[in-house]
Image (tube, rainbow, N blue to C red; front, side, top):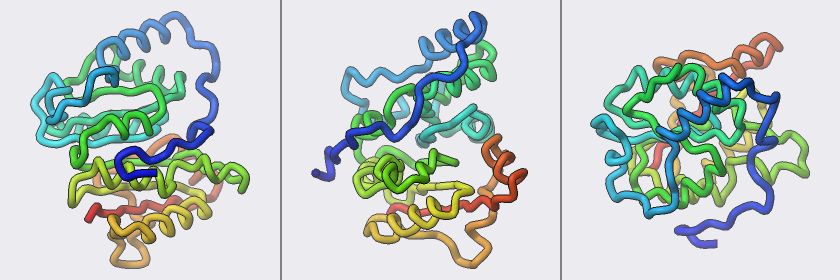
Length: 232
């Protein structure tokens, strides 16, 4: 394994690719969104990622596994001068986001519907201002822990593409995955945990809109945690 090209796991970090069969209207919206906004990893990545967006942006952030896209679109609307790349390999999740776009093509977003590690390996070094990993699949069984997205290899990927001062934000309602992430990030010399008090990691991020996963966790009595790590 090298810092430039960390090894890929033999199994994908995500689970199934498809859920319920999409209706024709959903499928049409999905195809339109991907045709307009999907990143092509065939050519080399541009040195300046701002060139990927049709609107002028000052920095670029990445959200891995955006689910139904609630937080992703909220942030893109709230921060119009920031470019956002959203990754979601689950077809039905991408279709939910496409439905919210309702035929629009925001100039500060791009989409990728495959393995996030491929995108991370494609991106230029020091090009990303922040990475969000919100309510990822916790893979609770020990035999599946190798499929958790937070891993030494993927933290190497994060460290390579994040510029100094960039933030990695992780939210989950699963205590074991929160502890796992905290331990892995604190063991990595390029990341510094930003909590200053005991309540910091239970305080949602600025402008936090909530997500459907978070709402489910709260209904079922689980308290979410919000971790932030700065790239040194």
